[in-house]
Image (cartoon, rainbow, N blue to C red; front, side, top):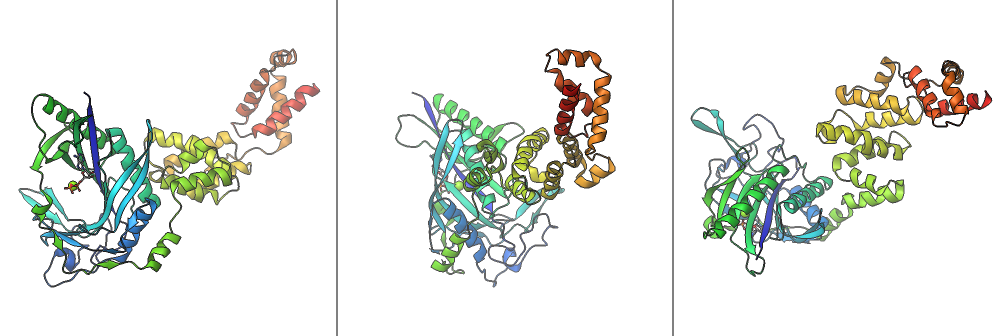
Length: 477
Ligand code: ADP
Ligand code: MG
């Protein structure tokens, strides 16, 4: 009997609100320690939290985009535990009545398409951060992050392997960034995930005992940690042991998981309704307003690119694969009329450079404005495609303005037909052998003449004009 893997993910997405979930403290990343801290975030007694409505609106967008039920009355509970980075001694979360329940998302893997059900998505506050490596023998606490709104997205235990888990995470990340509710920045911790894993024999009705891997924040590590953990559990059971329910830590240096603590049960946390906060009621009007203003989602974008702009399906897929790509395409498109050319360069040369450097487009030196201008300079014949390639490479390195590069390097395309004719004649005169062979029926040599003219002009001739001029001269001779 073969083993089956069962995985459920809890993804924490930091909602991109300006202020925190219950205070006016700023959520900006990277500020000096303990400078974005309100009295509420510090957990001082006698101050009362006020729920940030914008966080609810963002959570609702997620619910609507995943076909979920929206609880127009939802409430907050306290989850009690002690940790130095949690000064109140409890985290405010939504246990009994989350804002979002019962959604689903489509996930595409090599094996095809699958819908993964989302049990719930609830709002909760983030904790602060303990810093262990800054002070010798002491731990620092930075409360800047304390109270930052998180949307915890909990999947059903329906994911079947490591690749599917990564695809699910990617689909959630794509969705939250398109919805503009989370920046998706994994390096800064805007998205983190806990992975629950168990194994069972295929004909077992009951799920196996799970281990939970905490706070993994890269796609690569999710996949590796899961595969390690599956292997560990199967080997443990096959050698007569049993899996215990526990929280484990993934050590990426050693590529192994280690036990952190035995798994706590919900009642260990002494959950109870937060007496400081009333239930939050979302009116029909508010809900309708959010529905009416939902941003365009990846699939809708893809379809529109195909039907309205006439892009190839493969191009439309790549461009709508991330918010940053779609932005690049749409903003660059406002600078030129030739949208198909924008798409062709984005999917072709630009993507090749992205792959080479292994970066996302918003991490590159290419701004949408500069990219749009580059395409315009190709379509208005200022520069040839060949020159454009080198201009793009220059932008990639320096981020310089397209027109400045063209001007300072003297790259403007030769428009002067008589000059091109002169060069073409020179090429023909100095290659009598090839001319004779061409006339004798070796048609392929035509490309040779074009190449020679391009060489003479350092790529600055318009290939179309060169073709026409050469044809004219060669048939006349
Ligand atoms: P907790 O909040 O204590 O972590 P939950 O019951 O809310 O527990 O489940 C958390 C996650 O664990 C969910 O994503 C769920 O799908 C997943 N999960 C639950 N049981 C299993 C199991 N036996 N194997 C794998 N994943 C599981
Ligand atoms: Mg959990």
